[in-house]
Length: 114
Length: 111
Image 1 (tube, rainbow over the protein chains, first blue to last red):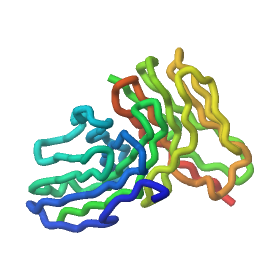
Image 2 (image 1 turned 90 degrees about the vertical axis):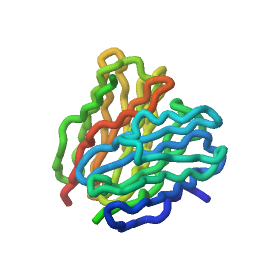
Image 3 (image 1 turned 180 degrees about the vertical axis):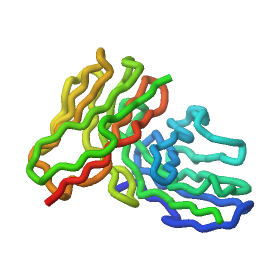
Image 4 (image 1 turned 135 degrees about the horizontal axis):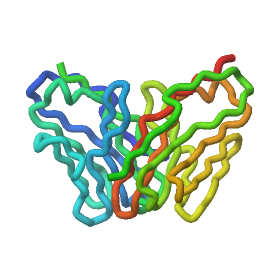
């Protein structure tokens, strides 16, 4: 694929349900980032994967949030027991290497928790 | 802890004007700085990446400069067009850490 893809593009769920968001990075990109953007606000860093190193989870807001990545491919962000405050656009980015490399973003998943 | 600010928060200019967007960061020990644009309801599009060893980067009508010692970067847009209307974000990376984003400048170019 030409760019970073994310699915679903939109997700509406009820409070208390679990959701899984998917990110397909650009092929060959070893680094993958998840961010959250609440309406009208800036980007909040959530988690960063770099190759086979332990991920940087310092941005995850609570233990309801977790993410996995298999090798240098697809990543899933899971939110358990969703709350209304989790409503936001979740953006994924990938880069060729680590922090020195240009980030490329996916279109995002808009999550609405009713 | 790295903090990034952007001034102004919003800017409205008539078509054809040259303009400058500002980005400031508190920790000058950065690895690189990246400028993005974000259109409403869309993801981010990379515009320019400046490594810490560089002073500026150019792409078409865009020119980004970096002054690490003063903790500043500017994005210069020449001959602005209505299609340039978007939110412009800067992000800085301190080696070994994640990117920290500024809050953005919302630009409107009026025809």
